[in-house]
Length: 289
Image 1 (cartoon, rainbow, N blue to C red):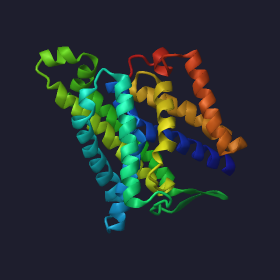
Image 2: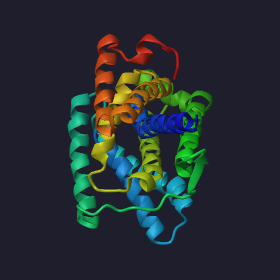
Image 3: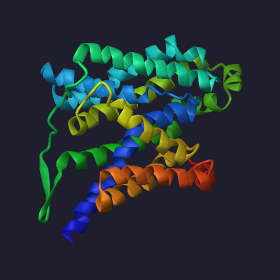
């Protein structure tokens, strides 16, 4: 029984991890239709923010929960104003532009921190006991944070004026502009919030994964697969894609090892998109956010 609980805990953590790294991309790609290939680098910058801040003596919780999303959110606003704002409605152009941005950010961080040595911070909270087995207390914290973050994004999009205006602008920018909405400001805020969520995720995961200039490559493929498999609904799609793909990954990783777990995730995504070309929420949960 203890083994079942321990395995179930790791399975839930894998699902939460996948949802956490995908949510920022879901906001930017799902709402704005911007193919952001620099998403992994936003996560990486969040991780480096935590490492630099803690090495300078800043409290790790403040660095992860406040500084990481703030710094990356500001970077996102700058990127949107200087680059993305000229490319709305041109998905291939945003793909190429953000790919170039990704390479630029990797180069800049590599020149500052070096390329080969990973940078780490120690996970807080220690371990928890599950009978004869132990698990990370920080992993339990990350599961809770993921649930709270999804609830916060849902409340923002569903219950606030900003969320209503943002969703209306993404659906029909011309009508929103005719009603007096500053669409440029809404685009900037939405992109910045998506970047901030990515920075928060990167900062929270830094103690678990360490940080390298190229670590974004380990995030970007999983995030895109999850968001695309989930479909058009931002939160429901990301959650559904994370549960399905994270569950498949976790089960196969337990049975055959982590490499086959990653392969199983990809195969599951291919089969899913073959059966449901519009994703899970293209067939189910169509009216969900």
